[in-house]
Length: 212
Image 1 (cartoon, rainbow, N blue to C red):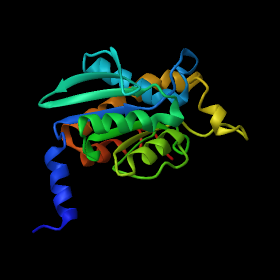
Image 2 (cartoon, rainbow, N blue to C red; image 1 turned 90 degrees about the vertical axis):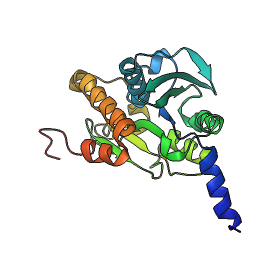
Image 3 (tube, rainbow, N blue to C red; image 1 turned 180 degrees about the vertical axis):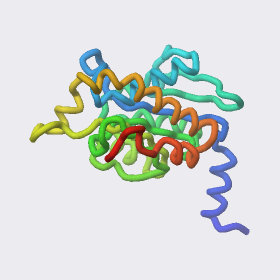
Image 4 (cartoon, rainbow, N blue to C red; image 1 turned 120 degrees about the vertical axis):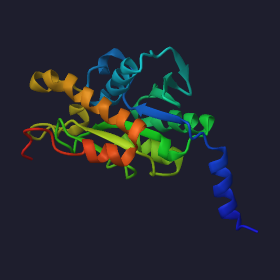
């Protein structure tokens, strides 16, 4: 007889939906936040939807959701509409409904601790103070899910980060945003097509001309 814990793991794997991936972009609903740094997760899944030739057409589990096919996989793109601090409600509901293993769930969000223009992909980790990620960890009961962090940089001077991330991209940052999102989209597609480790090795490197 197998120990009960081992049997539970086998049963979980046998009922998991290994052919479906969930990509969650974090942000806040509403036009006033549409172009803000805090909404770069929404921007990324919008760009990914364009690449996969699909559009967000319905509300499911408190999120705008769309689906697409990529080779033999089903890709679910989601933008939680609960506002950032309650993102976990939507993510947890989607994960349970589709019976997804954690390695098939990628969360995309802004990170003030990374310079603007820098991407970081990780298989797991804490929230580092990001309220949306903190909510997801609390609701899922684990921090072991892949994430793609978009560096948005620290505010200049002594300005607070909370207000800063709710401001729109401006100046050179706004000019570079299209290229930045394209690179992030390539990173997610690499994760989907070639695996997390390949995506990390390819996109966690410094950008051309970056001396930091």
